[in-house]
Amino acid sequence: MAPMASLTPPPALTVGFDLDMTLVDSRPGIRAAFLALSAETGVPIDADLAVTRLGPPLELELAHWFPEDRIAEVGDRYREIYPAFAITPSTALPGAREAVAAVQASGGRAIVVTAKFEPNAKLHLAHLGIEPDDVVGSLWAEAKAEALRAHGAAVYVGDHTGDVRGARAAGALSVAVPTGPCDEAELRAAGADVVLADLTAFPAWLRTYAAGVAEAGGGADDTSAAADRA
Image (cartoon, rainbow, N blue to C red; front, side, top):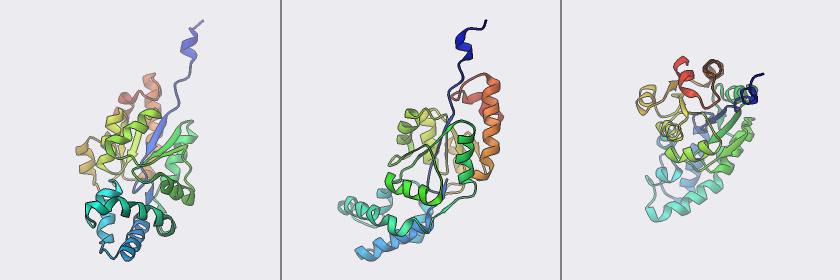
């Protein structure tokens, strides 16, 4: 009789996703929120420019428009008005719902790890009918590794070089989509293991990846052989 340990199933796969410009095209909503903030504060903000560089924390963007001693106060106000202006205009990116559902249909867990203020991230997902297993906010770049490690994520999907850095810091496979401010060349140069055109390609990639993990005889954290097949 085989040892009982050999009958233990491998741990379920956990996949992390970024939010802005990975799952959600939040540019229309963020543009509206910045315009509202500009009108309220009287400080000119080029909202069209701001939405071309989504990904990093809000404070880095506000630093282009406000003096340092106002950033904390203005950031709090932006987050406060955000639900009224930014949720409804924003849309799901192609394949977003299907990508999250594909992870869950495979028996895995899908989590969202984002630099966005967590309550506002949850509002976006609820409005769009995207239902991850957990959401963690206010983490950027390498700091995302905290949540990815805590959840045992084997894969992290994002659109920014900061997402690639977060995945690598967590020891997770970096899957990138050039649907945000970073193109394919930038994502590969940052160290992305896989670059997909967009999330519509993710379910098929996930099937190939999962088959590679199974063939390698490993659990969800056995990424190297599976990545070679992706």
